[in-house]
Length: 396
Image (cartoon, rainbow, N blue to C red):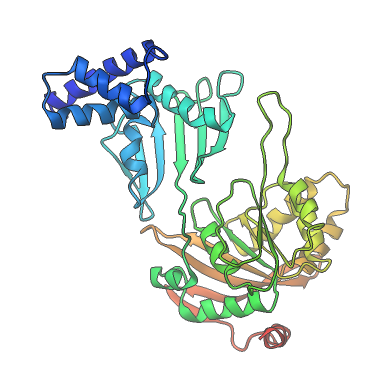
């Protein structure tokens, strides 16, 4: 940073402090007050420098400070702030790769101010009594904040950007997430009302693939989407979107995913799409899928198709219904038809690496691989199981 830039940064801090002290004293909107302060405090600067100073003051007063350029860059998928006051404290994910930036907050106080500006409109707060908080920005981006004493090196802010227009199945083929043959197979599965579970690790692109799969649902069907933070943007004409709600500052008013799944059953859905299964709602979802709401879709964190089924079993046990483990396994076997497993490769690409059929096995439930990437090349089981072929033909 040049001496001139550093001087503008310091001057922006001083003008912002003056703006705070004079709050309520003048008329006009905030932009006009900032412009007037800049003319008064920096009259000797050139016109371009005064405009830049106004932008810096506005960022510090109402925006997210040095993060603003990153959040307006459409190629940035995630912003990660690891404390303040040092180089290398702000990282981004771009095109599937994590990279450092030259951006930094000048102090922990400046970073806390930005965090408060994010949380205030959401009705959330973060302090020593509640040092962890999740939220969603107005544009749908997801926010996570961790502050000391849990964060040892200062406040941690993570923003996962929201794409207003999700990827279409055709774009996923172009990106290499799946090939055309697999896209057509999954389209036939969704049309035939098979229940699909998308599994993968954090950042593997599960929600993106879920949205693409949901786009195959016919327009005449009623779809109910249930999410912790609304990310899905389906284009069918009859979509009902539900979003969970955290507890208020007083600890009241929480509405969980599980409660929304139960309520969705009373809304006459043709399909239920659960953004991610992560708790006791797994049991309600399995019950719905096994009792007439076939063709539903969801995602789960897991490292493989087999692990995905075990995780769903474990989450269903969290419902505190005291069902035998064998009964839950039977529900898993009867409710889920296919597991679509996705992985983020070392080069940042997200790829569907396996599609497995859920089958009953001695002592529980198992999987039978139908598709896999082997040494980067697609492999298909040939022929497909006759029961599966019959369902696909019936749904064509």
